[in-house]
Length: 104
Image (cartoon, rainbow, N blue to C red; front, top):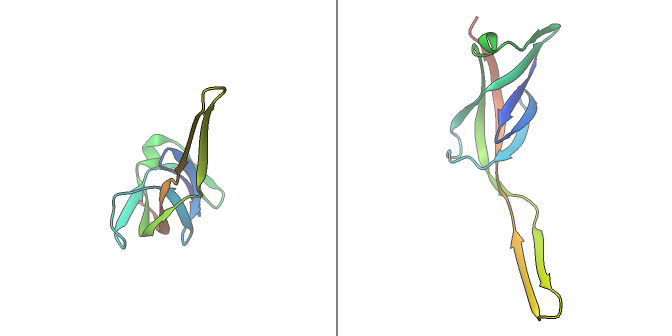
């Protein structure tokens, strides 16, 4: 069984036991978070109607915070002596999917 969930503005394909990286969450390490399901596939059955998806719950455990790769940004204007260097590292949170349950 797997599900497509909405996490941090993106959609991710997850199954039970998967570890994924999502945009930063304010939850503490060890806490449980839930994600809304966009699509659920259980064997040959595909659930995509919003009324049926409201019954499904995807739970995950927060493993910790991490940062993405360093992005270097350089601003330059010709003939003026203007140069600026900046960097950025996007904050992420690693979560482990602990269950895909339905309210049947």
